[in-house]
Amino acid sequence: MTSALAPIASSEKVGQIRAVCFDIDDTLVDYVTSSRRGLAALVGHDDAWPLWERVTEMQLARYLAGEVDYETMRRERTRAFFAELGVELADSELEEREELRVAAMRAAWEVYEDVWPCLDWLRAAGLRIAAITNASGPLQRMKIADLGLAEVFDHVIIAGELGVAKPDPAIFHTASVALGLPPEQVMHVGDRLDVDAVGARDAGMHGVWLDRGDTHAEVPQGVLAIATLDELPEALVCDVAPVGT
Ligand SMILES: [Mg+2]
Image 1 (spheres, rainbow, N blue to C red):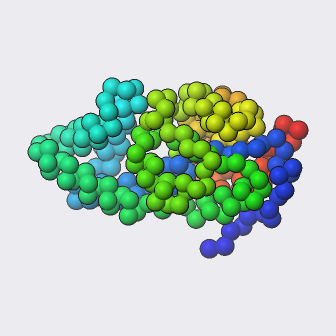
Image 2 (spheres, rainbow, N blue to C red):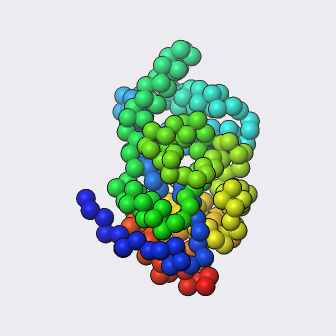
Image 3 (cartoon, rainbow, N blue to C red):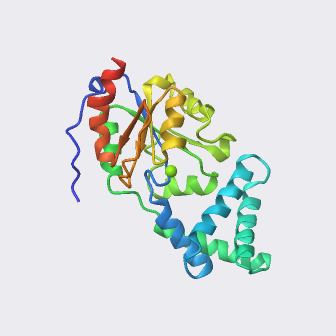
């Protein structure tokens, strides 16, 4: 499908913004679809998706709080998930099934079709690009590499590696420092209104909510909402730049 992007702008046209940070899951990569595919490999179907999401959130919070290491988190998550289904599995089987889940998920990782045209535009406009993600670490690095995104990002900030997660301003400021730019010269784009857009705004960045579901929910002051990344160049050229110039 062809992109509806505006012509490339020169860097001076994008005002004070010098870098754009992106969330990864459900912003650049269709996380839900690939994770459901992984769940189907783990348990034979993906009917228990809400349960898997709940267990993941709980175990990920323990990992981000430093209570458990990465491998323990993954093992405990699978064990807790099966326990909720009333199934007790031996460690070896848990491990085997987890491997199947990861393989199925990896095979299903895909970027949305508006991602590469947008990233190419940003590069051509002379902007730097970074990732700020609340994932755990190793798998996220693998995903970024698998999808060819590793070369695109000047910096990748991962909550599991840093020990701080969005919307804590510290993770946004870490990105800012890595980019060598003050927060007001950085835009952050993500699919979660609270965690991404409002978090970035409160850290002094330009917070952009990527509302892929086009929900038209109420958008707080100081946050820009877009429904597709095709809208980002225009937002940079027309909407955001005048605010800071
Ligand atoms: Mg996300």
